[in-house]
Amino acid sequence: MIRDVQTIIPGIATSDGAGVKLRRSLGGQQQVRLDPFLMLDEFSSNDPNDYVAGFPPHPHRGFETVTYMLEGHMLHEDHLGNRGHLKTGGVQWMTAGRGIIHSEMPQQVSGAMRGFQLWINLPAKEKMKPAGYQDIQVESIPKVSLNSGGSVKVIAGTYSDGDLQIQGPVQGITTAPLFLDVTLPANATFEQRIPKELNAFVYVYEGELELGAPTKAVPKQAAIVLGDGDLLRAKSGAQGAQFIVLAALPLHEPIVQYGPFVMNTRAEIEQAIDDYQNNRFVIS
Image 1: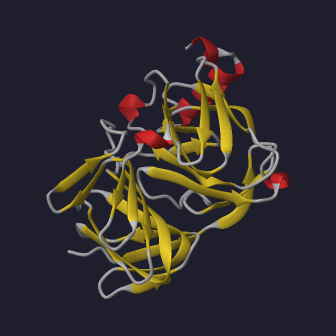
Image 2 (image 1 turned 90 degrees about the vertical axis):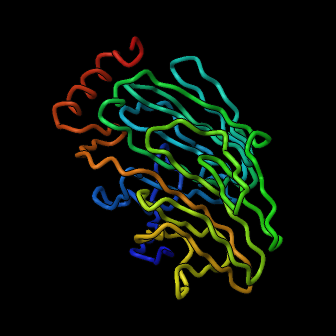
C-alpha cells in the first residue's frame, strides 16, 4: 500500500543559538510533532551574518540530536571531551541521555552553510542513560547509484531495492530510524519500503516532487507527513529533486518539553533544570 500525503507542515523562518537563521517545520509549535520526531530545522545561507555566531554551549536531556551537513564546516565540542569536525556530507549523531552540554560553532567566515538538525525522542527507559556521540564522516555513509541516474545516501536504517539491502552507519537504536538523502534527475521515480508501523515524512530541499498514488505535488521546505501504508513512491519534476526521507517507530509516551529538555513529566523537567543549574550535568 502506497503512503499518501497526510499533512503538510510548512517550515517557519526563525532563529536559534546565538542568532543562526533557520527554517523550522516539525517543532515550530510544541504540539506539531510526529512521534518520535520532535523537531526538524533546515539552515541554509551564503551570508555569514546568518550563521557565524553559531550555537555556543547549551544543555540537552532526554532525546537525540542529529546534524546533517549538506555544505559547510562546524566544530562540535561537549563536556564529555568529544570534539568532532562536521564537514560537507557528514553527520553528528548525539544521544543527550541524562545530560550533555555541547556547542556547534562554524569553522568558516564566508561561503555556504547548509544542512539539517533533527531531534528524535528517547523512550522513558532510556532518557537517563549515559550521553553518547557519533561523528560520522562522509566516507562512512553509503551512496547507492539508482538506475534513473539519481542516488541515495543511507545515513540510518536500511535502503531496500529488491534484493539489495544497504545499511547506514547508524543502527541499533530503539526507535529504528530510517534516514535517507535522495537525489533524483528530472522525471524519475523512486520507491522505498517503509514498514507500516513506522511514522514517516519527507522534506524536499531542492527541485520539484510528487508523492503518493495518484501522485500529488508537494512544496519545498515543509515536512510532508505520510499516511498509512508500507511503500513510499516519489516522482521528480522537470528540475529533478533532492529530499530527505525520515521514518521511525513511535513511542506513544507523554511528552513534556522545556526548551532543550524533553521528558515525560513536569517533575522530570524540574529535576533537569535543577540538575543543570547545580552543575550535575558535568558530573553525571
